Length: 129
Image (cartoon, rainbow, N blue to C red; front, side, top):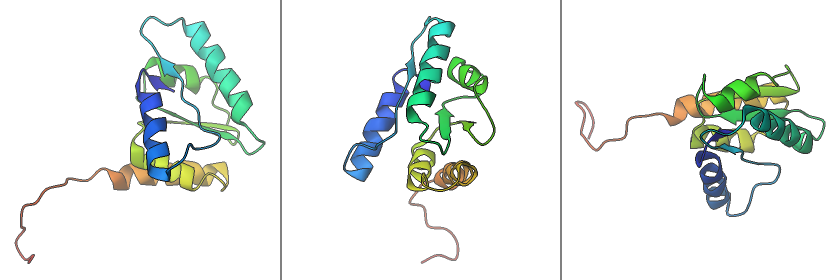
């Protein structure tokens, strides 16, 4: 759940990387001035649809934003976990480990975000050839 249009863009990027649409992956893009009750209802309905008995990981874009605040109210340890700060490395890692326990999926998603944020440059550093 993200501010529009990020969620749909992340889904399209995942389909590109995996060369096919990813099952049990949905995006809810929250638009400006969208009714908070509607956002909450959309999140609840998506969680019910996506939970196959192993729990659901909800990833939002920024802590403190409307999507994260709405999802945070739905967090239920071991059943619905919410992580803020979506990045493509985070999402790809969560998808890759989606068959593991929900706690493992959360930890792998967070690890993907941390290891995916690196400086990329072409400068030669002292001691490198």
